[in-house]
Length: 505
Image (cartoon, rainbow, N blue to C red; front, top):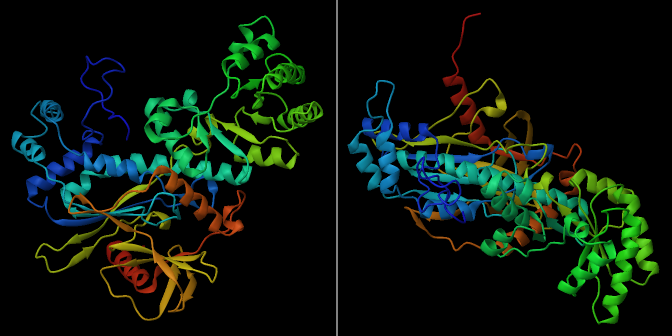
């Protein structure tokens, strides 16, 4: 999570008071009112299972990149209600002016000892609709309290990581992607989180210095138009910058006239070379980037600066980058800002957190639960779910099966599309597979050594490239097969029929 985010009191300083040790109150009020209700009814320790998942991949794409687990783990490990958290909750009043939460319940929260099991898909794994990114199993009250924070972390991180993976798909593997979005991000925390997720999803560096410090992401930057405008000429501005950074200069050349700016950059670059240094690059931030990059490349090459990189920025995203590539743009470094850190054209992932199983009151087994909807896509999946990814002869993803770990699997497996029962896929017993959900917490104690951010980034790139190109394409991607194991599909259908009321015509 980086620094702990929580406003402390109405008189706290606007920024310096924003970060504090406890994040227990990063939640919705209804999580706490439900927790109190469970406690009041004496069912707070009844064992429950929740799944966190999304229904459709973002950006009308064919996949998503799971991200945010390390931040979620950090939040869970530090989950503790501090004295001032409880004092605030004690100050809340209901509509009749009486305390919303009694003192005895607040004492219960003060002594809360987290005892949940959490299983999760590793960060960087490609995932699809209806697949749990997290499975939480433990006391009902505790599992309920995790919902909001886990969703806000996993939804945003997965959304931005997926956007970055799509941008990487557009640029190709050899170009550099620089995340330049902090100034347009949704606040400090949004900018910090976006920088992390963008790097995990495929970015190479960030302009966000705090993200560089906290997460070890390489930091990069050039200069602004104000630098050029602060000197009597472009040449003087470039020369001064080269004096400050003789081996790391990238000149912004479009303050006045782009191609003339390139020529002025070359003049300074010749002086740099004479002194044993090389111009690292030029940056284009406006205009027809395809045309200007071709012209700039020609001017640079003719002058002997064939290794000088051309950086482009200006509201870039995957579709525009694809178009520029098709137009023959000579850009090899892409500065992507607003469209990446705000996940432009999809404001949120839409992940949900649904109760799927509840231990029977007599402890004799499980009641598997289902949430119905008029929309088939919004009907939840009951059970204690696991994702089994079947692989083809090349070790690449072939199909995913959701199954209930509380029930024995049949010998002959058949996958059924939950949205269309006529779409079915038989699985041979010898088909290789791997289980995606891995143990992270057992009885509240972490049992997984988390990979580094760089390792998760490398996994994300391998995972995306393992997908068929038809699934990775931006326009009308192929649908990757995700099905329910047949007995789970039949049980879910049975529950739907039992729960849905039959109304007379």
